[in-house]
Amino acid sequence: MSSRPSRGAARLAAILDALPDALLLVNANGTVVNANSIALEVMESPGTGLVGRGVLDLLPQFDSKLIPGSMRRPGDDGGDRRKPTRMIARRTDGSEFPVEITTANLDGRDAYRDPHPGFTGDELLMIVVRDLTGTVDTEAELARSQRQTEMILRAAAEGVVGTDTEGRVVLVNPAAAQILGYRATDLGNRELHGLIQHSRADGSPFPFEESPLADTLRSGRKHRVRGQVLWNKAGQAVSVDLTTSPVRDGDQLVGAVMTFTDRRPYDALAARHAQLLAVLGDALRGPLEELRGELGTLAADDAGQLWPEANQLLHHLAAGYSRMTTLVDNVLGFQRLDAGAEKLAKKKVLIDGVVAAGVDGAVELIGPGRVQFAVHAPTIEAEVDGERIATALAHLIADVAGVDATGKTPQGSGYMDSTVVVAAAQRGDVVRIEVRGPYDGGSPVHEPVVRGIVQAHGGVLQTVEVPGAPGGAYVLELPLGSGAGTVTLPEPAAPEPGPEPGPAGPAGPTAAEGGAVAEPGSGRRRARRGVDAFLEDEAGPAGAEGPPPTG
Image (cartoon, rainbow, N blue to C red; front, side, top):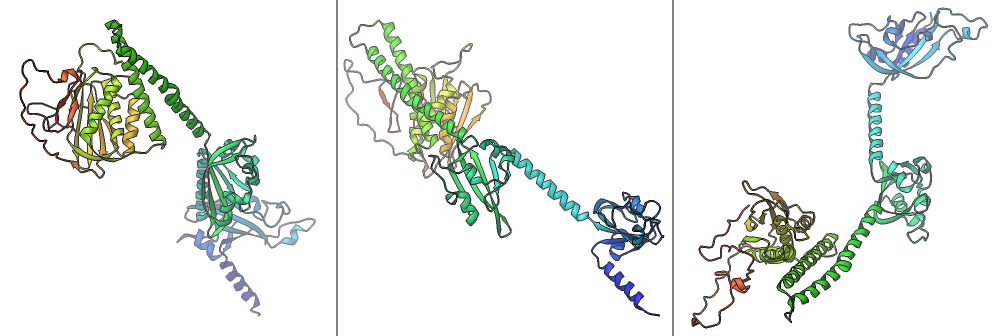
């Protein structure tokens, strides 16, 4: 007997075992009669058999009409091979896993061409089963990543446009379509440059070869341009901040992404800011200064023609206009610093002098005679902009003093201590200045100026609560920089004794008259205001009590 049939069967079995997918042969009874090695590995569990089981036990969602036999009429299948179908398969131990199956009919093919087809019972159905366990997980992860990307693009406030290597639009997020005045579907597969970047701001043509997008597509370089002009659907120029970045698939450049932010809200805000500076600096400050001068001239009353009440009223009005002018100057200076028009002029200064200047500036803001001061400021050298820190302290004192821009204080019942405490101390490489007053502060006029100046120095402004003490307190911390910190000044030379004036001799100026009084041990002269009370610092005379340094 010839051995060719057996050799052919062995060769066929080897080919089927070499397939990457599981293969089942099902007879007309719906029973698995044969399976390749992959099928046994994937679907058969130890101690159980795959061959001899019903196909519906293994594939519960399988269409039973595809099984050869009486359950299907020949010629009703529409062809021998069917498209892949996804379903859930069941192993012999009952566990399930996702698969994709493909079916094909074997044997009995002439019966389908017979005018009266019928089954011979030798027909077989081949089912190719592909395990999708890893594929489904990967597809689910890809789908999840795609959904997340779409949600991010939809939520982004910046416009995002993706292009291919020819500059045609392949991706548009809603923000980009809204900024440009298009629908996202209107931009798809259209050449981006000719649509939104064809001209410069002055209307002159803007060649594609000179655009950042063209260079990114050509060289793969990233570009970031401020104040770039795009053109919307209505033909109007839109000022944007634009960035172009390459998109690569491995080492191959496959496109670019253009992102842009609408600058129109920022430009409008900058215009209003410039208008505010112009109103404060030109339209308001000039007339205030002129009116203050005229009131000062009238209040001087060189001819002595005014009643005392009228003279007092004129002095009060002049002080009010002086306060408004100082406030306008300080706000304008802060705005110029915040906008970058002016820079900090840092140098080594002594903090006690800065504190004294801040107290003087506070008196100009709140008016003379409104509060009393308790000042403790040791000689600490720090590298700061002394003038601006003094301005910040002046506004901080005015804030906790409760005096608004009109010079009024909140009306309360009963007596309230009007003392404002200002104390400075060194803590490591930081200068701490505490300002405590009878009111909580937080004025929308004073606090932004203080916080902006402190942050420009790299410092911190904090509000603190003092147990048992009414009102508010601020702690201002500034880095020493290259300053030496706490220093000791040389003792001043002792004055030579002079002749004592007689009873009829001319009396020298006193603190009550506004004269300058020397501070013992400090070598400095501080102008005394008759309406203010100062506590001396550590260099003051014995017996003078000042608050201890806080913080």
